[in-house]
Length: 249
Image 1 (tube, rainbow, N blue to C red):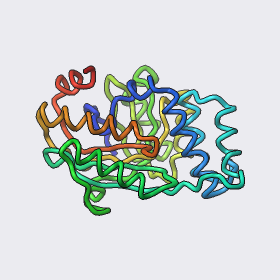
Image 2: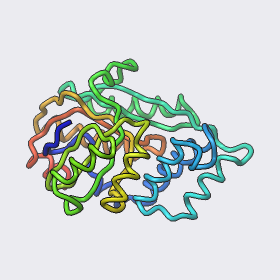
Image 3: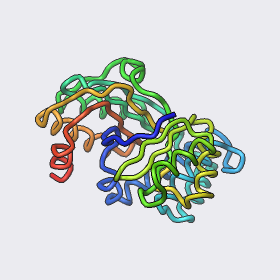
């Protein structure tokens, strides 16, 4: 297990996403509804629903919204959401993973394919990209919650597998199946985390220049605007100054 600092650009502009609160809550609510419908409508007895509710709470989603999303899963005639993962390539050979929850697979596939094409990318077969990523649970804390050594020590004791610490904060990675237990142990020591989620972390990043990066980030924005898309991941490596410049545009 290693603790280290690394500029993160696997996930994209949480700050920008947080400004779109209504859309963020909609996506969180859809995940809660889908989890409750696919499993059990009780977070204490369903691991996926428990994780979805925890993720919503750290984003300050109102309790009433969470309860409505769970209740919606039990309504007769409600939408039957299906999990779909799309994999493809952006300009420069950057691998992109798109996770979606949809009640119309054809509609979502057409929209995602259109967005890839618009920005010079192309969809591939399932597995074409994900082999270059690890599927992990992740718990994020603000930088002032602990020193890098303190977070590393606590993560080891809690059952975590890896830690990344830097000026932007700490991220503890673990087995997705153990996410709730690891998050609970860390929360008891450091307080409520900034985020709890299951994500894809790239094994090898692809360097890209500003021109390709600009199109990539525009493509990601377009994908995130889709109601069906829940998360977007990519294995690109961009100069930090360029990334900040394009993110602010």
